[in-house]
Length: 304
Image 1: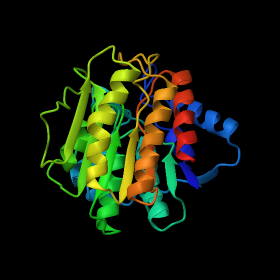
Image 2 (image 1 turned 60 degrees about the vertical axis):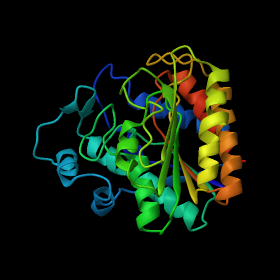
Image 3 (image 1 turned 90 degrees about the vertical axis):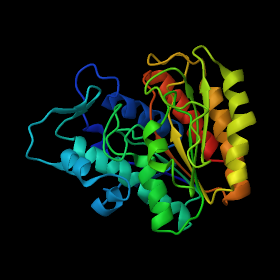
Image 4 (image 1 turned 60 degrees about the horizontal axis):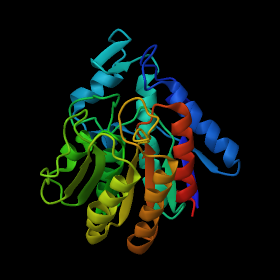
């Protein structure tokens, strides 16, 4: 059984006219899922608590995002802007991932997908960046360890941009494995194979123009075996779809079938090692048609 977490507040985050990370992204995803699967189990995303945020982020960043005293809109970095609706959207996006972890670990669902924004995997302990405010998947992993006592949580990330924030947060935390495929060189200019942390980081950088064969080979040869050897008790996915060939933000050449393939591989791995428990959360993807098709392919694969 799969649950889908979202909230209308996630549509109220407005980075400004012409910004790639627009509310239309989430609308496209929700329309695709609702049209294809009217029977999905929809859940309202709660707000993450301050204590849950503090497991990952410095108080100064939290206060900066949540403060109502500063004038809005305001920029946190050249790409990341806050509007009047941004703080609740960020709280709901992170809260969705925490609630989804609770659901799968308490047995209310086997898998969950968080259809939320803003995305999270670039956010570091003390900085919002790259369209990301709070690191949703990192907060979920820390919750699984601190609240549920898990010893091995794997985060896999197939967004076209390297999840530098997730890597930085966990590079010295052996209870978390981070495995990522991404275009390189590309923003944020991290994710070399030589970046190994405490033996828990596995990066597979792909050159511009790489397509299905290179992507699948990277996962078969390097990333999936590393995750399997780790024997995770929970699998978390940073599900970015901007490696699609139609996406304007990068130059990999994947299609929806590739996202279906990697999701099926991850489902099989989770079935072997952690009773099928997966929580996935939306990251990038900026061509609306490609995003909707790819996200639907991902959720379809998670359902089985």
